Length: 314
Length: 149
Image (cartoon, rainbow over all chains, first blue to last red; front, side):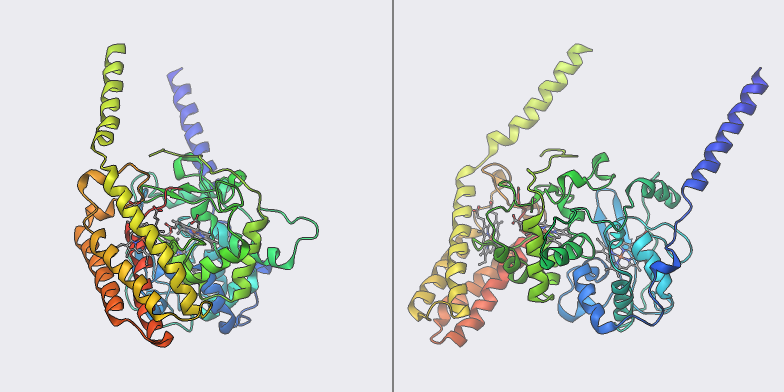
């Protein structure tokens, strides 16, 4: 009897291990989802670089002006531990100078590195998954024109169980997302709203801060309260609701939103602050048309009352 | 067991009540009023900088002087009993990173004081001072102000 139980248990464990292994195999992009090598244009990629906010995480903390192009990496403090945003400069040894376009696209849109390791979703690939392959190629071409930095990136050290990268594969099964729009197009929608959807939901990754997550912040974005605000991961306060609801920014015109993204001043001349400062400075690098598109999209999305999901209420 | 739970609940009530007793709502209101004044001044100054309002040297000097006197008081309005309450959006960093906070306050004082003393006569001279003063808003809010909603 005891023997039977032991064998049964061993079999169960084996099944669980095989299941975990199979479920967490890193999934890569289809070859057709990657642009032709050499097709990227660096000059176009600069726009995607600013829209994507790469410098906010990969340049040194507090870097200003031209220093924001030195992408030697930095440490990002979060409630789940300190993440190392690695060196993504074109240095061949320490950066991504030796990566192919396919390697880069798989990191950006599948969260898988060239060694087949899962990357932590602190790298917002769940938004970048919505980017076009052409934009990914242009961005890659642009990154290769930036100054190489020869600093090594230490490995991120998190507490158990978050330190098991293979486990990210399970998380991805539920939360990786896909390239479908979150806010679907209404008939007769303007070209500006469509362009804004792409910038906000894709490279701009605005929802990563402005939308609450399930599972106490470990889960996926709550798309039913899209952009309706979230607890501030740094502690006190909230990341504001930016939907056209009375508890959001209903009283801002599209022009007000575009102006805020350009200058950092709200309609009543309050000044941008917190983590939004970096984002605003990136947005200031885009064209007036791009900022107007983002504003048009934010006016067109569903008005949702300020979200309280996953709230620890301070 | 029920008793222990009750005691726990009691402790929580005390913990919640303690900061309430200590709130210094007066200074919180004063510093918010100074900041609202900065917002109003910024609005008027942006009008001159963009050329939407015809340049008025006397009005501009007045606005800079107002900002300067506000800045001189602002740093004194953050006693330890004003960390919470009154919908304050002051970041805990003000009390945790005292050196950086003192630097940010001192820079705002120096830049507004210099702008007020400069009394720029032309819109070009004004724009240079304006740029220096307005840079303070964003850099201080980045580290020391958190939105509540």
